[in-house]
Image (cartoon, rainbow over all chains, first blue to last red; front, side):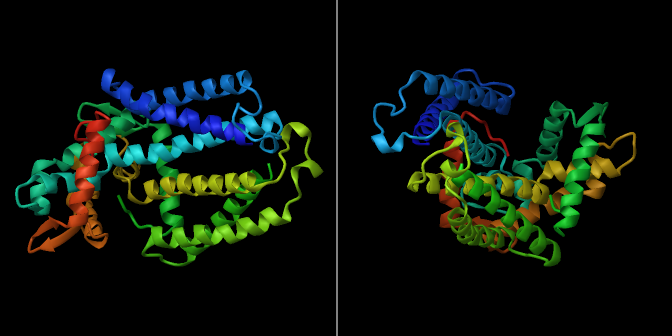
Length: 175
Length: 174
């Protein structure tokens, strides 16, 4: 199992600098899509590296390299994907975190204090919502007709799923 | 396979208990309760791992790995990631502005809604106020009359997040 794990760790170590480089050099329009493609390319590279390297990857002690190749490579790909999911959580927090943006705006003013109205003046709440609605336009959950947003069948299914989660977990309207 | 199976079974146990607790009890500190349930899950993980037979007893060589510490740790890490992924979904359902907007749009007229229509059902001021109060509870902001002031912890977090945004070339975002 350790060979797959080592290769998964190696692929993730390659992912982070590649992600930073791509975002600086290319600045992709659909950022998360670019991240998913990079992750998929590295998953292929991981599989190729698994085939091309010896069972001990030149470093593993003899007793640690005895796993069946199928479970080893599947486990490596699983861990690689789970690392990507974890990294995505971090990425969304940095990129889209509304609370993070509030903190940054307050930290920028000279006395580091703002009222909610002050935050809203520096960071339009309409923009917060519009940005999210535009992302849902890209995903096909909404369509825009003039200045009206209309829900698609896909969006309705997603809304139903989340509404039932909110109701089951007694979350209240939230948001 | 033994570690992965133990992780999957433990996650199912965690999910069942979390569903029951959050359905029957109005939990206020959701992350805190979920973290405790997840931590408790490691006892279940250790038990399930111990009860499962070794791979070589029931699996083809292609799918089997000899049992040692790495297998145990691998399963424990997978259990953590399953929890983290699930928490992301749970948090999205609870707090996401996009999800709330989508639900309001699904309940609105079939011709759709403008941003102004949406505001009638989903107060943007409340959305902001709720987050600022949560930041106070978490110790990132403190109240100063009608204003909210960054605490030391808030300043560190704001600067770190600002640097990460620049590192990833993300723009102001939010």
